[in-house]
Length: 406
Ligand code: AMP
Image (cartoon, rainbow, N blue to C red; front, side):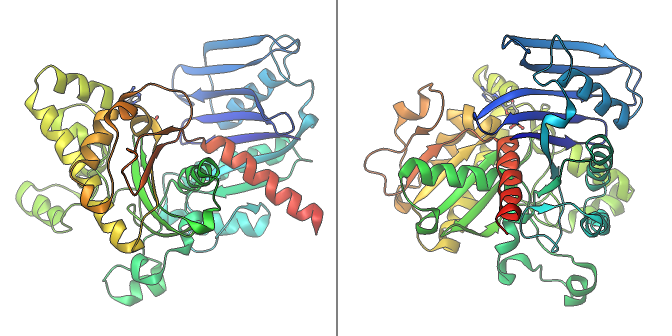
């Protein structure tokens, strides 16, 4: 079974082709800057005779359809492509950002599902429309392959009402579905399962806090395998400090900005989403640069890191309380996997909660899963590389097999 995973953004298409029988990636890449003067196409994979191939080219890609066509050409290219014909692809798995309350799990896409994703556009105006474009295109290009939607929000649909309701007039939830949804669900679910595998325990026996620290960042509290709380909210703006997003702020700050600085809604939206977070505090949203600046003695960078890690630490405490007991904590994504300083600062002083890192293990460089807690620590702390594309492929395979069994 070969599964193509697609993640369509407003000006990009990311793809990864999995050979599920042999557990290997056959190709991956991205069409970027679609619709701009010069687009960029990158492709990595295995050639028909099994050699590794890499290709990167500037191209003019007018729209997503052209981008997807170029990707398909690469996949079946007689010299570069890992497959000979489109028909070898058994199914296409799509990352869909917002499933709202309609989707609790992965689903085969049909007209009703498309209508439901469309209905959720007001909740994710930047993400769901390009996701729908991707679905439409691959439905045309692969008419015989089932199309499957894997939602960022689905894993968090088990969050109880006391954690997902905002204390706003209840009609806003009932009529407009204003509530916490949470995102990065595919990543939180993937690393939680990997943690259970690593510990040789069933996920249903474990209480976990998963900490996804990438450009976007979020945490999830997972009780006996089910998510019970998460830091992102109705949108991905709430919660942790991120690359350029503020995370939690006093909700009255926008009124202050409007009153005092005459800022419009659009200006404030831009400020909170694009000019805040690490970037707002110290001028760069790239954690590697922030750490370099801190090491060079830059005070703003040091302060930004303190704010960043304090927020994580505060949520660890909150989620400890939500879970009532904690077995495992997992760090993942670009920063979570690669920045020992951030893990150390976020966990400092948490001995009282039974969380204690081993300095050497935390700073050690190793591929794959790393255990960084000290032998004395009650809570086991792991670093687990996330793989959202693989999880989407696994989910796609799972729903197809369920249908075959039925
Ligand atoms: P992601 O969104 O998961 O790709 O993560 C992107 C973030 O990870 C950026 O802020 C990068 O600076 C950060 N990152 C990647 N590699 C490292 C590293 N070796 N040390 C610190 N941060 C890193």
